[in-house]
Amino acid sequence: MTASERFSAAAAEAGRRRTGREAPGADGERESGPVTIPATSSSALLDARFWLELSPWRISAAWSLAAAALAAGAGEVVRTVSPQTLALLFLLVDPLWGNIWGGLATPEALPRIRIMMQHRRPWLPYLAMGSPAARVLGMHGPGVLSVAARAWLPGVVVAIAVSFAIGMAAVWATLVVLGLAVSGWLSRHVPLAPASVLHSVAAVAAPWILGLTLFGLDPWDGHHWALVLLWTMHVWGANRSIEDAGARSGLTIMAVAQAGITLILIVGRAPLALAVLGVLWLATWVAVYRGRSLVNVQASWTAAMLVSAAAMAQGTL
Image (cartoon, rainbow, N blue to C red):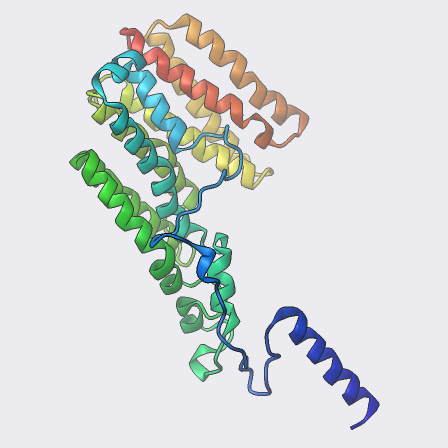
């Protein structure tokens, strides 16, 4: 064995010791043992982990549900809906629906599954790197089947169970979000509806309409449906602007949505809410003028959504 061969062998051995994995053989197969997971790593059958994703002040399903409560009248909601139902409703629309959406739209956010599925990669001709079969089976990352079996389907089952505890309206809404999540996954592979549109519907329209329905209002009556549609457009445009700062289409969508919301408040004779919205929306255009990221003004959008929703409960809209 030459000096270079001995050096290569020593480097490979050191790499195996650092990573706990065998180096790939000549045929591309990883010669490694199974991943050892401590028996004390979880005490539950369905392991659920909760954390704050991105900024808690951005528009999300929880804030959309709060907007629905304000539009229906917060005091009236507290008197007519039990605290247990409100708690289940929050768990459904935010963490559970979020799990349904994120499990397919962003499966790479599941590190444990990624590590486990990449630890062993048997070499077969139809499972070559980048092949369709390898992507579906998760040989090079969290594929559809691995994510569905380990994280996505259990979340769907829990969400449907919670939906039945709330009522059939929640069940139908959960099925709609399920369809949005599947469409969001398909949009990653084939050109369908933009993921930003589907995300805005899941984060704004679905929880808002479900909340209005359960709080005793008809979401398609009066100006409620228009406000929901406009805020869904606003979030869509905001997401486009944040993801691609150079694109003007997102700013155009946001401007149209803000103009529509302003018109609703003018027709509804809500001058105080309109004045507050003007101040909150000013932060967006100041940031655009100065060339700053719109991520820093997301809290102003959430506040504006809540203010416009509260104006709906004044009785003139």
